[in-house]
Length: 149
View (cartoon, rainbow, N blue to C red):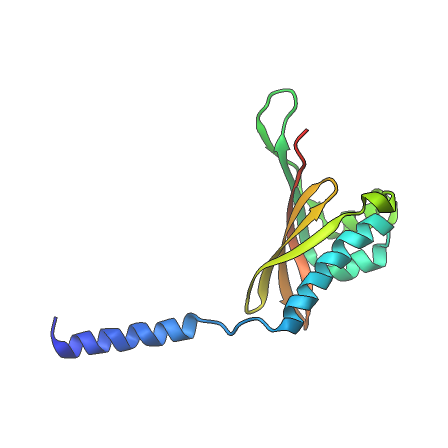
């Protein structure tokens, strides 16, 4: 490879690398992502449908991955959409005693307007995908699993 071609290729790679690197997420974004995750979990425990609605993107989908107790095969439950989860919250389907309300939130990753978070709850783990949507963080997808046993 000629020296000129090498320099051009190196310059292009450096420019592409600089373009692909996003700024580190701000402390405010990380706090807002964690708060949205808490809004999602705590509203479920409290039966607060309005708070749940604020935490969800309108095209939200939630799925559960588990094991069929009869066959032992892996299963992925049918989708639960935003309106269905809001209604289940309103009906109090997630209400549990305060001593069972564990909800440890970890923001796993943030890139521009997308983020992932993990909630360790009393029943298992929720993995959340969030989006910065119209100026606020909302939950777009959740994949959750139950504690073994």
